Length: 229
Ligand code: ADP
Ligand code: ADP
Image (tube, rainbow, N blue to C red):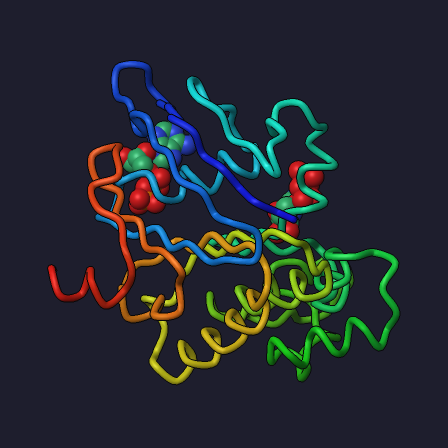
């Protein structure tokens, strides 16, 4: 369960400038498909369409054969976990930010998810900027640390479908390796759509799709694409 299908998907923010001009692919249940392509190609847009931040303007997106427009946004988002590029934290402790993934989780479950995402040491802290009203000093988190909070939240939510918008390019390689390991852990046996910036980070993907100028320019497995490019 959890097969995601994009069928001739079309989308434009501005009607004069189409971003996706008919994109079709499938992520079979439990498999990982990676989307690569130049900056501005529409990769993040694809992931936002699956999460229904916007509605598509042509074609269809379905999960297990059901059009995502035929289910409520709430039930759609219950089966999808999204680790976005820029995680915005709630005005509350890091622990609460993790718990948001599944509000009914026990303390122990929150702690385990935090440990897996390597944020266990600061879950009691408040994020920077959210501290004025309680008169405490918040903790300044790096982009990578915020992403790990989002990963912990997703580990706790444990949805059948995952969207990972990789934001590892700005990180030092040690942190990148750690985040990659956590991401590999969450995506095992789940339907996963990875937005990737580098071929090197998606060696394990079952299929790689190269998006260019609003269409799929190429698709294949890692080794084959590396040989061609
Ligand atoms: P990628 O993830 O491949 O870098 P995006 O999906 O982020 O590409 O963006 C595709 C194009 O759509 C870019 O030209 C970008 O400037 C534009 N775009 C992205 N988000 C918006 C938005 N909210 N409003 C208008 N244009 C947008
Ligand atoms: P919605 O709130 O629209 O139902 P979700 O609750 O599924 O969407 O949230 C999707 C993701 O977006 C969350 O995992 C979280 O990272 C982020 N998010 C949503 N709303 C907020 C918010 N108000 N502040 C911070 N992050 C948010």
